[in-house]
Image 1 (cartoon, helix red, strand yellow):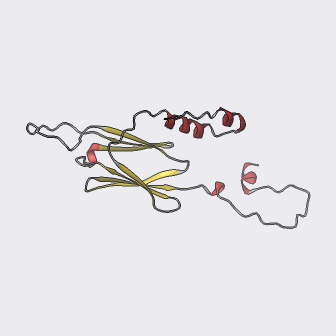
Image 2: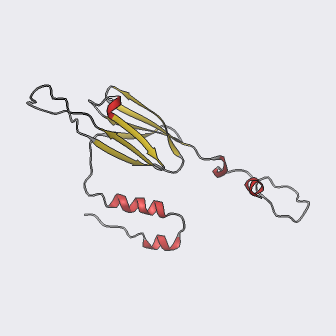
Length: 155
């Protein structure tokens, strides 16, 4: 039994979280879960992640990996190679497209294909301006308000 969550109250009381609420709404609307190709997502460190996807039968030229803003898209497709009549076809070779929503500041570091497994490494790199920083308390010689370093560059 599925129940739909209503995010309307959150829209009324929060600002700037539209993307998060849309993401949550979109995941609720998925009716059929596509399980092919199989994949794992592993957190390998505080800011490091790895996606491993089983793509047996696909070569490097058959795969396309793109990142546009906060979406990672992995596509696979290959030309049909008919070398006889299949009596049983258990190795899936159909085209696929798998999308992964990425958090802000997550970027793809690289990809590798070995033994039928595609491995994509990801890293979250928070910009210096967004990292927490310690503010030193000092004796102010004037009544001028404290100006942060970014304010000085703008002014």
